[in-house]
Amino acid sequence: MSINAEDLRSVAENSNAWPFEEARKIVARLKKRPKDEVIFETGYGPSGLPHIGTFGEVARTTMVRHAFRVLTDDKVKTRLIAFSDDMDGLRKVPDNVPNKELLEQDLGKPLTKVRDPFGTHPSFGEHNNARLRAFLDHFGFDYEFASSTDYYKSGRFDGALMKMLEHFDKVMAIMLPSLREERAATYSPFLPIDPRTGVVLQVPIVGHDAARGTITYEDPETQERFTVPVTGGRCKLQWKPDWAMRWVALGIDYEMAGKDLIDSVKLSGEICKALGGMPPEGFNYELFLDEKGQKISKSKGNGLTIDEWLRYASPESLSLFMYREPKAAKRLYFDVIPRNVDDYYQFLDGYQRQEDPKQRLGNPVWHIHSGQPPKPDMPLSFQMLLTLVSSSNAENAETLWGFIGRYRPGVTPQTHPKLNDLVGYAIHYFRDFVLPHKKFREPSEGERAALIDLRDALSQLPADATAEAIQDVVYEIGRREPFLDHKKKAKDGKPGVSLDWFNMLYQVLLGQEKGPRFGSFVGAFGVQNTVDMIDGALARSA
Image 1 (cartoon, rainbow, N blue to C red):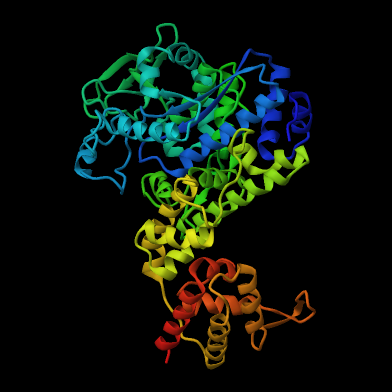
Image 2 (tube, one colour; image 1 turned 120 degrees about the vertical axis):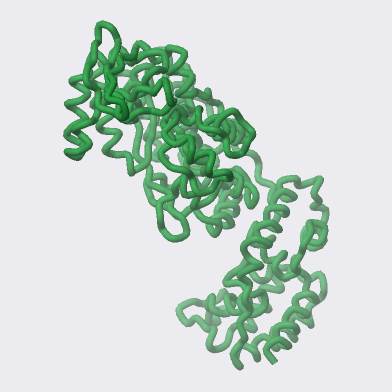
């Protein structure tokens, strides 16, 4: 089903998908302040290795950018700047890096002057910038990378820095009420770079001269006074004034930020207005939490890294995770991966069946693929693959493909490369997360009797029995106490079967809590293999 640009825009103007809601803010902004180019920005603090939250900002901002292009028929030029605050001073040593002693010696220096503990780049900041760019390039994002160090030293920020100096008192009036008394007594929006040590100095400013473009500070060790220009990389700004200055200098129209920065966004917005600028549009997304419910931190290294997700799942599944409910707090840990992998393919399947353009524009895959979702071609779910690996203890892809070929004749790694990728992900995930926690429980006497009956019933089926025929048998054997669900009725009017029956099968036979549809699993694993597996479980508990 195709739709012309005019009709697409009409649907988009009324879509409640959050990227369109955000994009409509930018359209309204242009009506107030017309311009030929709209600039989106994402920020990255390279004090630690890039994590998925960093990627999330770029992915979500890209979705808003595409939605804006649809709303404006792509008649307004857009750019996305991925900005690295790599001139910030290193405040503490991250937990997840080697050679920590190097970083200890460089505390306080700009990140692009801190030695790289990995030994691969001229500085720690440049190492982390490279990691971020490699990942964004891997995803094919359309962005421009910008380095704070480069922009300060090259003079690109000089005009905005002079403006900040001219409005020094206004900026102080905005910032001081937000600070504790002790901090307010020594606060300055400008941080000089010590020419002797290279450290970013947190010192009081004893004088400022807008006409000369200088500040004067007192050396905390020698009490000697120094006067330095605010331009050319000799100073940098505290981060809230820095954020505002950047919005003004680069003409930023849209930038989202985490919920923990709500107050910072407001303060930077006030400073932006004081400098004569208009704060960008945006929204505050909820934070990602680790398995303990704690906020993910770059320096702590908790939660998932970018590389870890890609070891276990496809890039598209990560994009789906980012699309979903950006204003709701979500656990970002290994156990969320299988659901997002399978949900992505379900959304992809659903997209092809959706005739209503409004439904299509509300489907996550439309936003993940910038309006051009590929055709679905995934004959097995990730959950099914994980269960096959678990049941067979498959240590290699060839074993797993043997089951797949029997279940889906004609499907090979060559005909289905995406499935081949999924096979690799499933083996990695099983080895790292399923196998170490695999725990078989013993069946009760009633469950043991049901398993014997299931084994006998499966033994009567032909080897090529369909998944549906197998599922019917599984249902029939489970239609007994304590597995009856009297609130449900089967198609034949008989009592339904509760999930407890199926959960018992996975817990006793496979040592896992849940799994895919059991009839489909048996169809792929093989009837005789399943009978042998039941025999093994009965022998374990004899």
